[in-house]
Image (tube, rainbow, N blue to C red; front, top):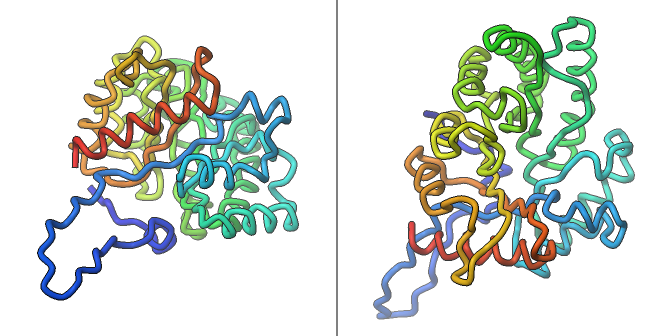
Length: 297
């Protein structure tokens, strides 16, 4: 399995951490973290929708409030700005000033890439093109898309693979990846989505397994199905017990599956609960991921 990362990802991740040892010092090297932690913008969707948080302030919040150095955008929070050079330049400036890497854009509401109607499928592909251009401008590594379709299990696989392959062919010259999230419908069936990615058969097309979006499909099996193709991971969280563990899923088990697949890149916090505030939910997820970084190193 190819686990190489682009130059921009390695630079953004800070390269290799090297301890500066004094003369004669004898220290035990710190084990590197087995994965890196990013913050998905959807974690703050209520604040963004209520306009109590401005989209431009997302990078600063991630760095200053949580010490997180990589962020994942949602296109609906700057929906009409994909082709606005000044707006994208300001996003770049804000991220650069905070030392934050803009990892990906999650793209919704641009049509179904597996639409049975060839014309609508082509329109959906074209609708995503502007986000490829925006992602390249922002220095992102990829965009996250959906694989919605209609028809039988096999027919939806064929249609989704066609749309994804054609979009990936547009992304490849830009050195961008296309990643598909388990995000409702048959895409929440790990076997179905893994089959789609195999049919696309392109090194630039992979998955973004989301811990919380498997519906009726077993989440642990689903994560295992999708990890061979994973280029990003979403640590969806909803609630926590008094010991700081996520109550709706076994994070330790899920992250072992992630690491056993050889994945060592960004795991995005995506808090979606309603008992804790958005910021408290992000903080709780971050504490759990930090603890598991140490345990699983």
